[in-house]
Length: 317
Image (cartoon, rainbow, N blue to C red; front, side):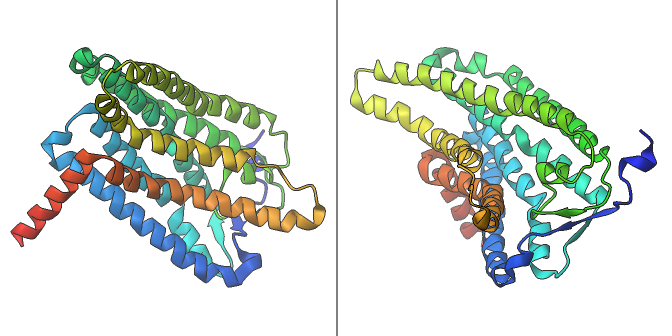
């Protein structure tokens, strides 16, 4: 296939967003902007305390700092464009910018791997605490680096496969951003390879980590139940509660997004379409916003580090 044929006459895409519901745009602009600012503040504070507080220089908080970095990067790849679309009558994005956005959203998918590694950290800390310093040494960070490189490579492959498809006419994306499935629907060619490769990618980067987390928590729960003291059991479980809550929120939202039944009523198609877009929009900002809040409220070490940071700032002033 020649390059000239690969994109046809399409040089830009039109993002529908909430064009059909303009009365909602200003309300959602304020709401999404507020949530985005909370993400920047919350995740930024977590990154800061994991760097500045020596008590948090452990593998668990190293992973948490990197997760917070992803919590900033993932919404930043889409939220500014979404906010701009709420204020712009015609929402146009160049072909190349659409490709960059798809690449960034895919590359940020390594969040699942980080959650899996944090589960492993909790497993070693509770089930094999004496060997924790040995097992969770610098060698334990290698899988994280590998996952980030692999995530970027897979993202490049998926984006290249999508952008090489011919787009022969319709350039209207029924979404807020260049969501890859919405883009693939516009291609006038067979997309089976794209769908299969995305399915394999989802199994590797979503399915394998959740299986790893599930197995880790089976061992953790078994170990905790063997502890004779109720107070010690409570203390051991409290070290996992924040991570477990984040996992439930993250995967629960994904299951809700893709597992809810589709409406069979043709008259309700527009409402279903609006619902799907809003759920996808809030998924992109809700989970990154909740993560810092959960870790701040349910983790005594983080709360203490934040209080120390605030008191130091107040004292220096």
